Amino acid sequence: MNPMKYKFKFGFLTLLILLLFTQETFAQTYVPTKENLEARQWFAEAKFGLFIHWGVYSVLGDGEWVMQVQNISIDAYERLPGFFNPVEFNAEEWVKMAKDAGMKYICITSRHHDGFSMFDTKLTDYQIVRSTPYGKDVLKDLAEACKKEGIKLFFYYSLLDWHNDDYFPRGQTGNGIAGRKEGKWEDYITFMKGQLTELLTHYGEIGGIWFDGDWDKKNANWHYEEIYALIHSLQPQCLIGNNHHEAVKPGEDFQMFEKDLPGKSTQNFASKAEDIGELPKEVCETINGSWGFNLQDRKHKSDKELIRYLIKAAGYGTNLLLNVGPMPNGKIQEEHVRSLEKIGDWLALNGETIYATEGGMVPPSEEIVSTQKGKKLYLHLLESKANWLLPSFPEEISSMRFYRSGKSVKHEITDYGLLFHVPEQEQDQVDTIIEITMK
Ligand code: GLC
Image 1 (spheres, rainbow, N blue to C red):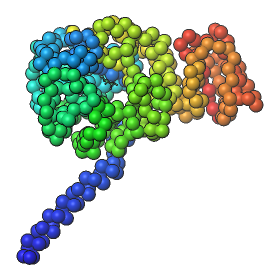
Image 2 (tube, helix red, strand yellow):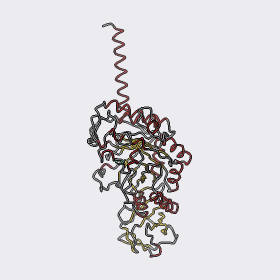
Image 3 (cartoon, rainbow, N blue to C red):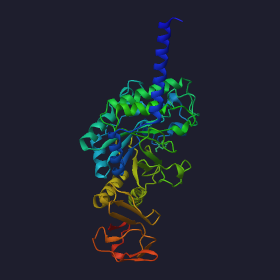
Image 4 (tube, helix red, strand yellow):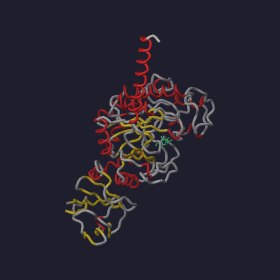
């Protein structure tokens, strides 16, 4: 063999192996950057965010799954963008509403399962600027308003797509939608990478990418290693979460739970207890029963239920991402705006016991949760009763007082645990908070 040819061949092969090896090890040994670790810390302390499900489906007022629920054909659904004209949309109003509610970040659907992009993407015409009469990029406005108000912006991004032919082979859902064709999976991956690159280069600093839809095709090769590496190379601080309902995968920065506090399983897709890890956590929940705008859904949770969910989430050491589904005119329904105001009022008085806390040492139950910050332990009593006993309280107490009135709490450490008394005038219908300072 010609030695030169041999040398070249050998050099090329080494390079190839080296390249493959670095890619592989990078995927397996994702080491978050300093910025990323700081962002995780910020996230864990933020505790409360606004989820926004908005798309052309809002026109039909039947939730974001309407295309699959009503088996709307591709042709028919493609008429919806033509009706989408949210002239009353005001990004600053939305961001102010979130901020006044005590929320620290917003996560908005950039593209949901219907495949319609709510931003100005070059990769398809099936997007807000090119195919709606509104013709403006709502994510751009939102990014600017968020920046102005110091609210971090996250993008929800659907892995599942009922409209794109390249989402093929198809998954478990949307199979009654007429007009879907057979395309190429590799092109779909390229399309997603392109869109994510746009989202991470055109809208300033992004708090995180919130993936959803993995469950539609459990055995698909989503190319997560490359996609996650791409996101972190474009914006190292950008937090990656994936609603796959499993233990976190390499490259993810936080763990999410849908409609269930960590370890609870009221939903058939709940994460298994053994899958709960150490990364910052977030639970998402709706105000009524729907994510996208639903005209008929009147099952709005009460202010008390919502505030308590936030408290419980904090007691379980997780953020709450609370959802609104804006209407096709760009407004958020009044009931939800009012609920958010009420939560904001509560947080303005009691936020110290929620923000930047961790789940406290008293294990959460239906009647009590606890949050903790250094030497301070906050008991959140969710039941109105006078006499309480906390078994095996491990710490020595320096002081114990009612958080709101400041009055001290009569208590005693007994062989059975910490005994204390809550007089009726201190009992709060939503949450009676006791602050314990430990020695
Ligand atoms: C589910 C739904 C989706 C919604 C998401 C929010 O995955 O499929 O419509 O966006 O939950 O958590």
